[in-house]
Image (cartoon, rainbow, N blue to C red):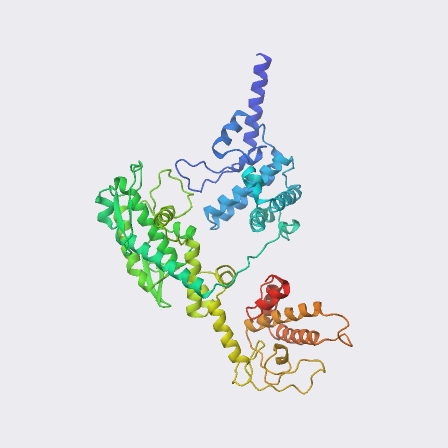
Length: 576
């Protein structure tokens, strides 16, 4: 055998052995489209594999263009693969896993370019270097964006933090860390400041949303089964406003489309109706687009609840699990859509909103592209899924005045509702201000104190009160703490409010000059100590009270303050 042939044979044998030593790093339980490349984390073992195009990386590996796999990475990559697989098995969405893999490729691509090690023992150092790289991108000038490659384009601090957090969460589990690895970086989460919505802007927002909802209803009404099966193309859709647009498609129905009826070139009308129904469903239920898109068709049952219906899957002798909640007026429309959908699609297509796709991909995210195009053509505002959900949440919050009930109806945690979806409203602020002055006006009878708690509205100071302690006068919160008529409340809300009030006074203490008082004890310090006494009493009285105090202090430490003190504390922190 010639030396060259012997060398090639030896190289081929070595590559085969390397491949045999690599475990299965694919995701066989994930459903892929006909033209979609299955996920395989084995590409992360090759230098340059993370940066290569998905459809070409296997060919590059097979041809030897990426060299031999770096098996010292195997323990780390196997651990990451196991964590993503476990999360998928535990109910994590396909979209979440896709984001994790995409972001991991960004980290590995950076490490390849910087010649940094990617092993279990060195990943923390490499991760911190990647964090510095992301931080650098947050400081780039926007003007450089068009001249830069994608990996060097500017980032917001929130985006950089999100990227690092996605990978950091996986690494925390792989490395079995007791503290978060992202805390080793200089990346910090930045909260978006919420500006109050004026009366006119709030009115305009609702008008745009209602007009968009009317358009959705008109499109659904004008695309019944008879139209999508037999209408002549192009088909004109007329709205109640007199506006109209033509809908048609020159593309034939794709082969193998999971449709039970011959819709031909009218598949565009089918997709438009489904897209419209999905947007209406999101507006009615408050679900996010990814959740709603992934729902499957079931035998739904309805139970009256909160002036609407809880919708669950009907199962005889089984515990009912609520899938979503709808307003009662939407039920008849939803049932009409279900009948339309059952007529057109085969039983094998189980999606509740089964779009006809040409590329057969399973990971296409819902973007409402058809409705966006129609709104552009008609020169009217498009209201996206997030805005629909925001409007619904804030409308419910105004209507109920109860964050707990609103959070339950919209399937959110209360914290998520208040910090993500709640929009400050000038109109609501004016109403709350009116109620506030009705409470603190000394000429009116009060049942609530100006500080957290309750009182009778007749200020009377305690017998034993420090000389510099604030005197009760129903105008200053601090004075309530030494008032005979002040009453503590047995609730977490009260404990949280007290902890927030204490933080406000601590800020005041830090800003006081040392020479303003003859001794070291200031009125603010007395207030801090008084609140501390109350919190310690709660902490020692029972286990449930202790949990309240722990949770309240944790919230304050995170900057999550009680709404009654949120604005004052924001001013003290300089975030307003």
